[in-house]
Structure formats: structure tokens, C-alpha cells
Image 1 (cartoon, rainbow, N blue to C red):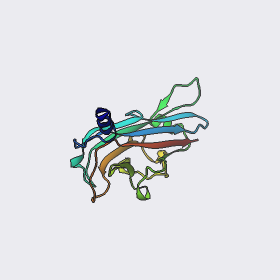
Image 2 (cartoon, one colour):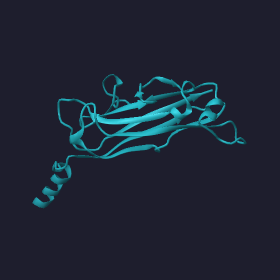
Image 3 (cartoon, helix red, strand yellow):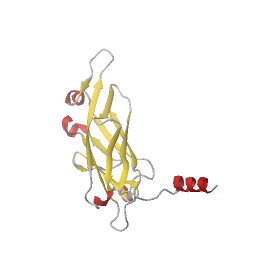
Image 4 (cartoon, one colour):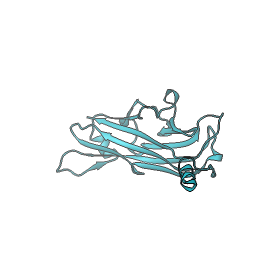
Length: 178
């Protein structure tokens, strides 16, 4: 009976030994609203961008590991035409807007960061400036080679400690176009 109790305690109250946050990742889900053309925007890093194992003792409120991914725009005018990508896809569209949203509970105070829990925040960037959630980005105002996302893992608050664990955040991107 004691062994069973000890096993249950180990499963539900694991000892805090390491200083590493395991499996820190940002999941990026993309959705498309269909117009006259069939267009898509995808991350060059796939739908799951992963920071890997992070030494949490090195995180500060302004410094931490980063991951970067390019966004690739592609469009097909109809079933008989080849797929266009990058600036060719952009020139085929009258308008193209991209909006980033996050599920309820994930944005930090004022949407300034993505709350990963464990006193960890993920700072999102779009084209090297802080990403604004629920804001339309006019893709026609950028070069098609400039669509870049970057995420930085930082300590959320200078008071308090970062605890070990898993950080996973979902960020949605919606492409609307005509």
C-alpha cells in the first residue's frame, strides 16, 4: 500500500529538480477566408514552432531565446492555372490583409504578450516590430519577401521566479483578400 501511495505522489507531485522548461513551443494555426481566388498563407517553419529545451535561469524580462519563421503567400486563380507565390501572388490580388488573433486567456495584459504560464511570456513580432493582435496588416504595403514572424521567450515579471514546465501558445492568423 505504501508503494502505491509513493507512486501516486511521484506522479502527481513530481520532485522539482531541473532548471529547464521542456517542450516550449508556439503553435501557429492559419485559416483562410475564400474570395475570388484560392489563397493561403503558411509558415515556413510549419504549424508548430518550437523553442526546444530552454535554460530558464537565463530568462529576463527583455532577453531570451527567439525563433523566426517566414510567412509564404500562395494563390491559385483557378484550377487550370499554376500556383503563384510571393510577389506574383500578391500582384494577382486587389487587397490582402492578415490579422493575428489569440484564444481567450492567452494574451497578456493589454495584448502586449502571449501568456505562456510559469511566469513566462512570448513576445510576438511581425516584420521586426511588435505584433499587434486583432489588427489588420495590409500585405500590399510590404514586399512579399518581408513577411516574417519572430517569437521571443522572456520572463513575464521581474518579481517572481520562472518555474519548469511546458509552454504552449496558439496564435491564429486569418488571411482576407479580394
